[in-house]
Length: 293
Image 1 (cartoon, rainbow, N blue to C red):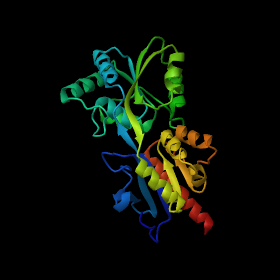
Image 2 (tube, helix red, strand yellow):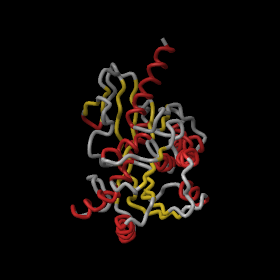
Image 3 (tube, one colour):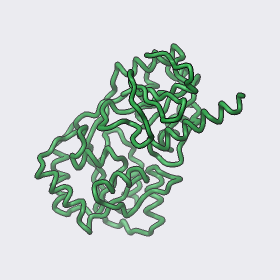
Image 4 (cartoon, rainbow, N blue to C red):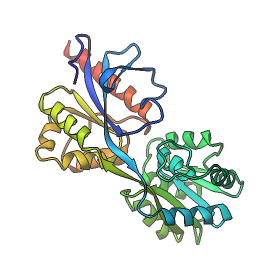
């Protein structure tokens, strides 16, 4: 890893999937540099990308195809998206999509999405914004203060939508929590959960991260998924290394995973997006720098 520049206020590790169609921190004014380092325009923060996870095909592509067929037929009344990645994997429009589909099939999926009777709920504003790029508005969205599975359940309760015997589809990652589908079923909904992608550990990136922590080359580590926290903590001694740096989380569920490991999460953006996370990180280190002067 390259050494920190003399003007750098902080060097921050950003954990992310191994592939991304654009710069990880889209819209944040980043310029790409060597060794996976990105700089915010006008800032002294260095963000070092660690592609900690590979996005892989789901274990049961037939189950995905079956769910898509039912979705196109109009069987489902609601679709629940908990991430932009799940939207893209489901609709087949992302270069990282876990299941490739033909253009005609993708057109059918998009037409089904855009039907007026296709009701959609999303876990937060960033996911809702991504859905809008596909031409669809979310009918139910977790509040800005509670962008989590718990928050989405509360959003359903708040708007007063009846879920009694509602047929709902939840396309998601293999290792996602079951709190949301269990909560929807407790409200008498019929929920089909389909795995549309799997995340696997990029061992080389994990080793690079641990080495950087051991060498004290990092001031902070930003986690963008709870699964990343579990992956890093699976390494012997990693908890002690993480305790020596500032930790940040993209959202409340990831923060909770950090705190469940008896670690402190010091950076949490107001909304669960990469842009908000980088802005919150910059503000954190600017405040800390001002106090130390």
